[in-house]
Image 1 (cartoon, rainbow, N blue to C red):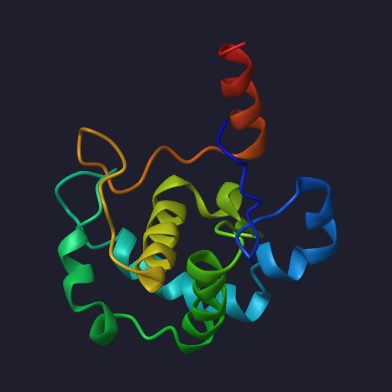
Image 2: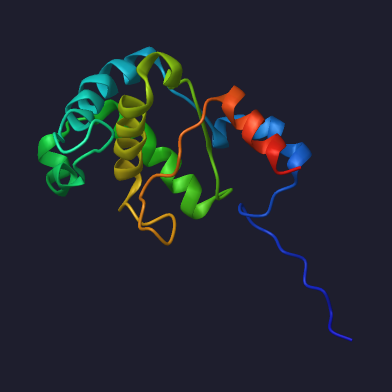
Length: 146
């Protein structure tokens, strides 16, 4: 019989212990960060005239030149290190999805994703962003699968 090897390190965690480590995985966006993100999200959201629901991702090709987000990039870099070398996940809170609407919120999430690294397809259709749901919508959608 093969011996079971106990895993150790920062990427090994036990759920109940995570409450004591919220500073490592819970990202609550500040007012200052929102004020920086809002005009960039507007710029990206309004970049496409092809469809009211589409966003022109080619604007992200020159991301560093087009979008100056020093405050947000600094904080995201800290969390990115935790994703790669720590717990391996994070939770975002505080983006006013209901107030901002779908397209502006989608643009904000794309910008946040681009700050973290390269955007990649999330499904077989090549979408780089899945459907955004508010908490109430998420709970309703989740219940459909039960």
